Amino acid sequence: MSLPPGPSAPPFWQTARFLTRPLEFFQEQVDTHGPTFTIRLAGLPAGALEVREKLEQLRALERGLVICVADAQERPGQDVNTLADLERVAALLAARGV
Image 1 (cartoon, rainbow, N blue to C red):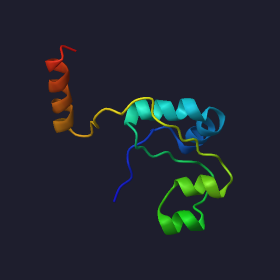
Image 2: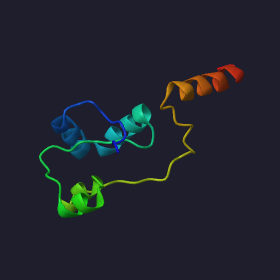
Image 3: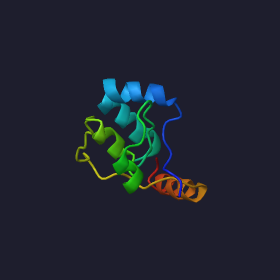
C-alpha cells in the first residue's frame, strides 16, 4: 500500500515549515493535495508506536510535537485523483458555467 501524495520538497524543508508555520504549511498542502496527504519529517526516526500502527503522525506525537486539527469551514469538494475524476469535475463546472 502506498502513502497519499504530498509535497515534493526535501524532508528538511518540510520539517522547517511544519515547525515554524504549521497552519500555513498545512493549508498549502490541503490546497495542493486535498484533505489527505503525506509529509516527511527529517531527522526523526520511526518510533515504536509508528512502526506498530503504521501512522506517521505518531512520530511527531512521540517526540512531543503538536499536531493541529481544526473543523473544516465547509465540506471539502470531490477528490480529483485520476483523469476520470478530472473529467467528471470539469463537466460539473462546465454545467455551472464556471
